Length: 427
Image 1 (tube, one colour):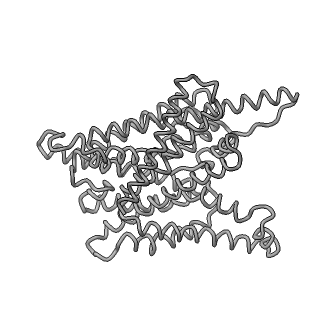
Image 2 (spheres, one colour; image 1 turned 60 degrees about the vertical axis):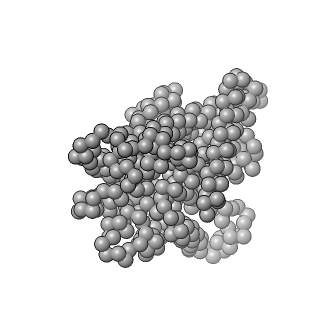
Image 3 (cartoon, one colour; image 1 turned 180 degrees about the horizontal axis):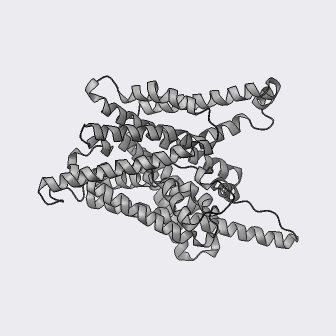
């Protein structure tokens, strides 16, 4: 999942064009979650799953607009205060954490940043689970390579080595490679889906459930929310544009396009495999050299771009470790730069070990992604934007808009509670 850090694609002194911004939005949203959508449609039914994905896309777009409106209102208030004081200060671009602090003080910032970290952690663990299950499926004939073995024996050493790279710009080519491999994997899956549907010689929707039960609807919605990554990049993406007035229309185009792709991909995958659809659709592909090559290429690319996912986590952990005036900061200054670098690398390896251990105990990619989407991502995408909007805009908003904000706030809280209770009751 994307984070509230500066994307490599956003770096540079010149503003982005609408076309570049459109590409940046798509890159920040689309991730490995798309390959689990057919399983969500199998769980909910093709009609219920489609409605869940469409609703998640529309709700995400609306709440992104709430963040922008909060930022605009705060800037307006800041301008008025500066006018009264007779001078003008330089105004920085607000981050998600800045909005939390403006609305609720330091506690608001801590809670917002903690939610972002939990979201990034969930996405990082999902990446590890995804890679582990796909790599182990390629070597299933050997029977000895389990997903946990892949994570601990193969991924952990590679990620520990890559964690020494601290420049996001150096990792940017890997991110682009991962996106290209995701497109290749999606195209391969769609090709196999269409071949199965044509060779089956039956009506596409025959034997496929439109509504698979009440529990499947929140599952599909939670998974869809997980698939709309990059929510906390909204303000940074808007700030990167040379003409910010066009951002809302570009954002609408991106969300609408991604939602349409998600709908088609999820429906096609479920119609092709039915109840045999697995939580990662690439595991349904035939076991031949071409699909094995696609799986391996996708996993290598994701492993190489994994440090970008980890960057905001490392950034916040290191900021806390080396806080001004802290014991560790004083100790490192006394020991020279070598001690500080050693502590930094040790902290990064420790975080990687912890996440790898968690990934080994995650039973299934689909269930875990839905849980993260329905709890942490729902809080980040629906609860906080509605809460900030009520706090910042408040009385200036119309009664109808306040009612919608309260609706999103309550819905997000209930949905997160449902996702958490589902996991607790099942275990």
